[in-house]
Structure formats: C-alpha cells, structure tokens
Image: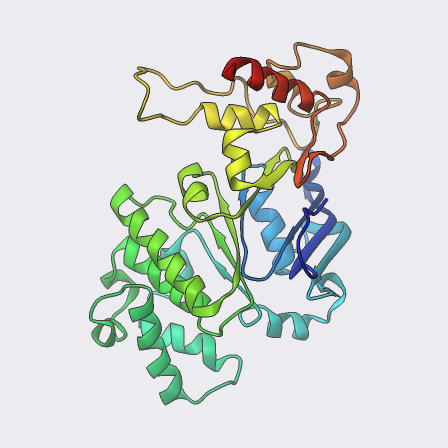
Length: 340
C-alpha cells in the first residue's frame, strides 16, 4: 500500500502482528499493520492511546518483552533485511546505530547518577567507532546542534540539573550520535509546555538536518504532525485505517476516525466554547467489535450491516491515499457538497 515513490523503502513493515498474554486473554496490540518509510522522509504515526503506535515501534527495535509479548506474524524489512530473523547480537548492533529511538520520558530514559554528556558519549563508544576523547568532543557538538546553551558546561551536568525540555534535547542528541539512518521519536513533546514544545520541534529539525535520517514520529499532537511530517499513518484499535501525505490528510481525510481526530482540534478562526470529541471509547483489544472496529463510535456508519459485519480492507481511494473504510467515497462526496 505504498504511494508512488522512487527507489526502495528504508523500512517496510508488512502484516505485523504483535500479541501480549494477559489475565483476560490474548491482547493483539498490533494487528496486521503495514507501512513504509523512505530515506530522508518524516512519517507521522497518529492515533489515540492504545492504538498500537508505540508497540509497532518497539517491535521494529526488537524491544517487545518476551514473555508476555511475542511477534506472531509479519515481516520488518530494514534496507531489505528482515529484522525478525537477525541474531540478538546483530540486532544490538543495529539498535542505536542504524536505528535509534527518542523515548517519551527523558527522566526515566537518562541514568540519574551519570552526567548527560557521558551518556551521550557512551552511545558512541558502545558501537566502537571512536575513542573517548573524540566521543566527548562530538557529544558537546551534538548538544550545541540541538540547542543546548553552554554545551561544554552542560556536558558535565546530571539529568536533574536539566529542565524537561533540555533533557528531551539531550535524548535527541543521543539518538543522532551515531548518525542513524532511521530515528523513531515516540511522543517527543509529551508533558512539555507549548513554548518548550516549539523548541523541541526545532531540535528535531536540526537533528534531521544533521543526519539526513528518515524519522518515524509517533504522536497524538496533530500540530506536530502539520509542522514536521511528509506523510501520515493513522492507527485505530491496533490497525492502520488511513495513510496519505500530510496535506491531503488535513484537507481531505477519507476515514471517519481521521475526521473525528481533526474535528476535535481547537481552531483559532472559529469561536466555540466546546471541542467536538469522538463519542465512546477505544475498542477492547481482547474482544474487538465485529466488522470495522470503529463502527460503534462512527456517525457515518449509522449502523449499516456492512460496517458491523465485515472488516474493511485497506484500499487506494485515490493515488497515494489509502483508507480502510467501506464508504470512503461517500466522505469525499460529503466534503464536496459542503464546499459547494
């Protein structure tokens, strides 16, 4: 389901299934998820909490805890190689060098008893590409790159001496230390105020310019998506329900869930006392609804039998635009009538 794009994708996730054993039964957190990302591209993966965004990323990195988790099906092709078949030692060599990750909680991701600079340098030393003095010099340079002032002094400081925004920038510096070809950023602006979010946006841009890496941006922040993404994958209930370029997604979404996400955003050009939430709650991943998982919350479905009885296939509704909705064409027609 890839759009027209030159060359081969850097990463191709194909039919990925990731499950967890729980007291309630088998939780299929990722259910036949497929998407691609090309070199230098920024792909945003959006959806509510529990939609499978982060579990997909952890599957790519080989970080699913076993037990209770397991990858039950699919392939994860990175530069043509299936990461699900490589040996653990080889995966450790790939993780942090060819593929790196920016985790959403910098306070728990950084070791509190080691200086920030030492931890950034250690990321380079772990892959044996340089000596300690050279790694320390590059760590200072990386802190400057992501906008940390007085980088040489900050190098020697500890995580508790950094603000939340500064810690997140340090994690970005660590993620790009080995010039990876793919960076996965998992909710990089969570729990940061608006001003600091803008600074982190800029740090992510600078980091990508430094490495020319592709980036998977996992977020529920549609503002961040509009700022940074080239294409967007929308996930719901462990499945991909829509994917297209960022402009098309905001102006002509073809899935009711995507329309609900966009309708729930505040708008500066409209006066309204209340936002428009999506009714109901996300589906149980143990006992999924029959048919389309979104149909119990979908106003467009209106209880139609096809929505209740048949899981919609992902299909190309226009060039480069894929949707898993039985009635995607009606959404386009409705929009055209409103605009007319």
